[in-house]
Image (cartoon, rainbow, N blue to C red):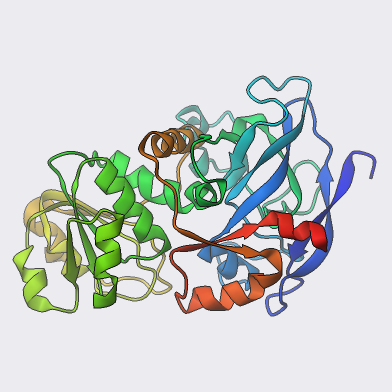
Length: 355
């Protein structure tokens, strides 16, 4: 294909296949495109769901599937009309690589809600046909409007998960005006939760972590928590009844949301960013009392993602990562399912060069 080039990648051939070395096509940069050599790519839990076709009803997986939407790399080539970036710049790409640019959502900088959004992988590819391929690869070509600038004072490996876990937690905290004088709860201390704690602390809130694991108390304090509550302890939970302004629920396992809703004060909100497989049972009285609300949040738009990265640069915030070579990705998936990582895996994509 004249308008494309080959790039090494790791792909899954089916829902039950391991990720293995593959060659994929990337488009040659058009006028507004930026070509990026990928240095690091974070591993998101949604990568596992997508590779194993566990979201078949909402987002069926097309194979071969190349996951990865937490990308940090260096610009190697730019199109003739690119204005914001130059060769050698340290940049990032998150969950989105295109949208229709014209709908009301795009006009309001909510590209993630655009009905014609193009996700970084497993989305219709408007240029080459087939589907888009993600960051488990040597390089990627993206419209400059979906490329983000990375603060140079941050560790690039720790930046990668900010492109999903970071914006997923930052966006609702900003939307619900979390800041000084607010009491904020974070449910769960995993890949999402640890970022929620860092952001809420940096925004000036009083931060309480809810965990089922007493062993996470020390780490929660290190990350910025003022207090840790073991959620299985009814007495500890009861002490906080009706006192929270905002709670960020990062848990994807089945759990009782009413136990946390009852901790909200008047007009308090709890936002879900985890995605439990089964519908949650919500008691009407958990919402009626104190005029509480329960809502959800999905990543963020491009402008807000850049705002989040700039905030991280100013406050020296990055994700806690375990860096792995691409050759250990299948092992990492198994460990991720056991929550055996503090707190995100990040692939050193330089390891792909040896293949």
